[in-house]
Image 1 (cartoon, rainbow, N blue to C red):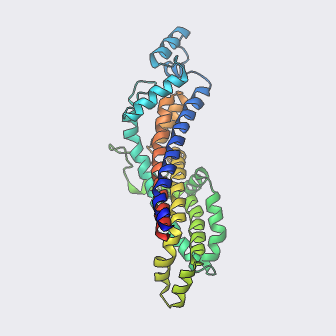
Image 2 (image 1 turned 45 degrees about the vertical axis):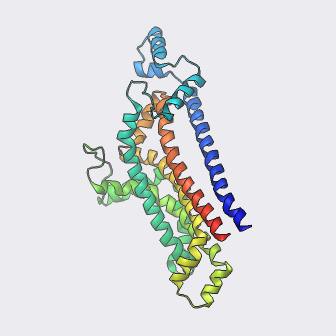
Image 3 (image 1 turned 135 degrees about the horizontal axis):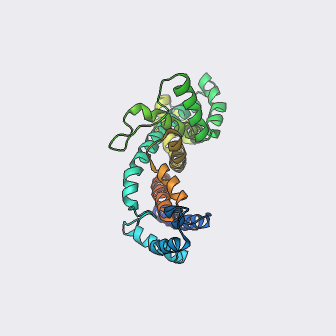
Length: 318
């Protein structure tokens, strides 16, 4: 029986990965369709309102917009598989635009994820171990409020308090030649705006996972044996709770990267948010899909890690 579970874990992991890759392709196709349904013409958005119908038609032919949607999507996805994202409606290479903007968004999302992981683990562990403490009682309503706050609303509140009222932190981001913020303190408010809602949600996940794992028989045995609380938590409780906790963090990656696009607009942060806004205005399906593809691949990678941890956990229990 144990051997069967051991052999089936990689198969289950491979099946989940294949399903998510198929979902990614379906998502990209939906993006092309959604952009196509937007009112207006991409060619006219590039040429301007004064362009004649003949000029617009010529531009559409130049951009390939007169071809069937399925043909355009197939040509684009074929190029992506070879590393070529194509060009925007204005003729700029999409790969260069993403290379100049996506690292900044990854920095913002990565710092927010790091803060989410550390904050959720510390607060969730404290809540699970000390539910009757002052902090434990405050986390019950506080985590719900934090999780319910939209990133845009929280960003505006942070600017109002820490920038306008107290004057402690800058409200906008100024970029240097590298494209990154010129000062580290310009990252504080955007990172907090992204991380606080995710900490609010994940601290509840961590607390529930640890509480469920603490009810396992081997944990009760370890407590009766007189092992220190820290040893029980790290060696006997956390390994059983880890798959659920990692799955929660993996889900947060998508929320952080999606929220980053909104937060970037509030703080004038130099990421892919501005690219996405411009591409929607130009009805540039290739650029929109490229942004979605990079974001989705990042989420897919984290979900794959979560699936691997879960498969390892099942194998270990077998």
